[in-house]
Length: 640
Ligand code: B12
Ligand code: SF4
Image 1: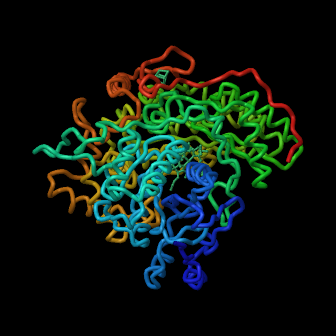
Image 2 (image 1 turned 180 degrees about the vertical axis):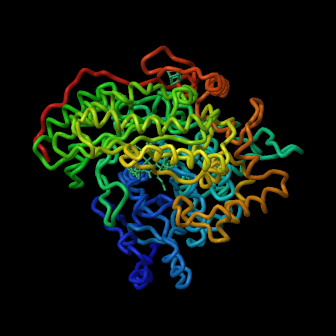
Image 3 (image 1 turned 90 degrees about the vertical axis):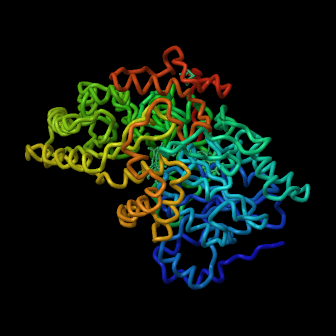
């Protein structure tokens, strides 16, 4: 049965809201299919505003992979701003997709991509606007199956009440497998209803269905092991890993945003995974092992993507792009290909070494040398040993001197505050480092107008990392260290005026900490915050710390725990963690040993270039590190 577009009802509301163009769809490379000609229909949601969600690589990839199947349809939906939400409620307009403006409730599946936990309340808004019951247990055969994915889905317990299923890891093959199961079940006439469909998904071993697992607590409030409550459901759920990235060259035709967005360029993911072993980095830990795209594969994606999208800038993305085994050849090959054209190339440069400057110089042949970004992450050498970010101050000064000497005017340095074992002194050394950067930069460039911006984020311990046992630093301590840092930066005006400082106070990080390491009890807090108006929690102008802390007190304290229990409390080695039954491939014993190494300031090398350290991922997943060098070169093509 066909489903009608809600656009005729939406359109009269649009002149009354901010940035209405974000709701109209029709972007270059978007897809609209005939509803009746398809067997399985997905709505893919990025639970944040269009401007953040549209360029998201994960959603773009899944959208295209699914739409390539002739009997499958995938459309996109993003969080609507509160102004439109109010009008939609007033006029009874449901949550819609931007592609064909179909109501979310009509789809078979709603796939939600959670890169950050701060998007949880926006999922509840979308479900509610769609008329889909908030709680998975209240849904019937009439309602879509709500599936969470993305990095935050590695601990879906806080949203377990609201999602029917969660997938850990890469989605390319997972969405096809889920589609196959839904297609077969529908063709058979939906035997056993929704429960049977969810059981079929769960028994693959790669789809977590929270309601099939019992969660109980002991008298102290600590979690008991989480176990399945029915047959056919495995005790642990494994993450998915797409091994051969060249076989998945997506997005092939990148979406071009209609409205202003955070990232107006084409992105080509040059490898996935990272084994540098930074202990704070959840993305690095959960995406192991490293899988490189070949130089030819990258060249083809850049060429075809530019042709399809008309973008004039390409970002070569990954968690640490300078670490591709053939990055020098890739950057040179692409710079040669596009020399003299309007096509700009860029690399998110975070590795602190002179090699990175060579790459940036090569890529900027066509453009301006404005700013470079590096991520020392910790102010002192001691704290950098704790977090396994092995970079010395001398390396950093050499690197930035080379950058300023090469004509770059602005260097951005990323740091964190609130790291395990951190003292005031570790943070104050960020000021000393920034001042030294300015001195060295003035000397190297012979100019006075160079700039250095230090950007400081609050550290949040994440699941599946060696810091998953750590006590999160309380916001007052973070704020006091940041205040002292600001004073130290300004203590020498002649240097301080060339140093910019960007930071947030420590409060949002504490809430992110609650959501990151929370268990099923935290779902009540999310729901209460949402009922009390919580929306867009990743945006400082919408975030309310008081709303979160009062909701946490009301919902958790009667259960004998509180926000501190989930955040500022250090965990013991034998404590059951809410994600112990969700297998990222990392061996818990290895993570614990790495945590102990952190406490004794021991560093660990990158296993890409050394023998294996037995983190567990390769044997557990039946995978291996997939890197070059292939020794191949990029041949010239006619530039597009
Ligand atoms: C590495 C990274 C970067 C790198 C490279 C990005 C890249 N490769 O795309 C760089 C430095 C360039 C970068 C830039 C930016 N980033 Co960034 N980035 C990340 C990070 C850490 C990982 C993203 C990643 O690996 N993407 C690769 C894609 C392929 O993976 P994926 O999205 O996870 O999707 C796969 C799977 O997870 C799965 N999957 C995903 N969703 C679903 C759903 C279902 C149903 C299923 C089954 C599977 C599934 O399938 C996908 C394909 O395998 C995330 C945080 C995180 N932990 O996810 C932040 C993050 C996405 N970035 C963020 C931001 C803000 C930015 C910038 C805007 C920063 C800036 N001011 O310039 C830009 C914008 C870039 C862009 N393209 O949108 C924010 C977004 C905030 C928000 N409100 O949502 C995040 C969440 C970080 C944060 N906590 O603030 N980023
Ligand atoms: S199993 Fe060994 S080679 Fe594979 S990611 Fe872990 S440490 Fe590296």
